[in-house]
Length: 121
Image 1 (cartoon, rainbow, N blue to C red):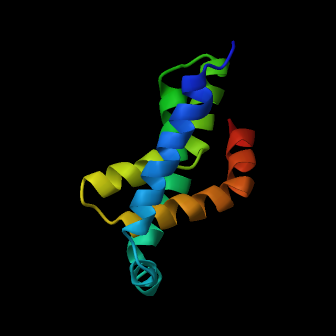
Image 2 (cartoon, rainbow, N blue to C red):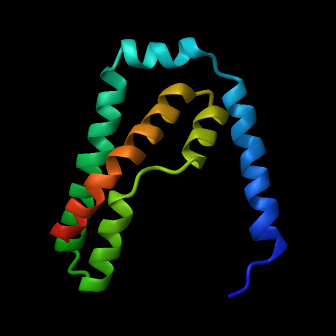
């Protein structure tokens, strides 16, 4: 499969511009607030790192998925949220700083959690 100019240049450039614009709308105080009041971040990380893989595991187990699909579902459940979640949060006037913090933390932690979760699949 060959990459077109759209997928290799234009889409990454558009994503960069959107993320830059969104990041410029935030100030350092937004991120300080996230870490001074960590309850929302803790709930978000717990849901993303523990609950989502558990739901995926139970769904794969009780739906009787073939092993290939079950492992694929667990990979999807174990992966951190993407940068588009930050855009959706921003567009819906949600807590963008919290969304960016959750994405960054879960991406770092996923270095350890993805192999552990996939090992159980």
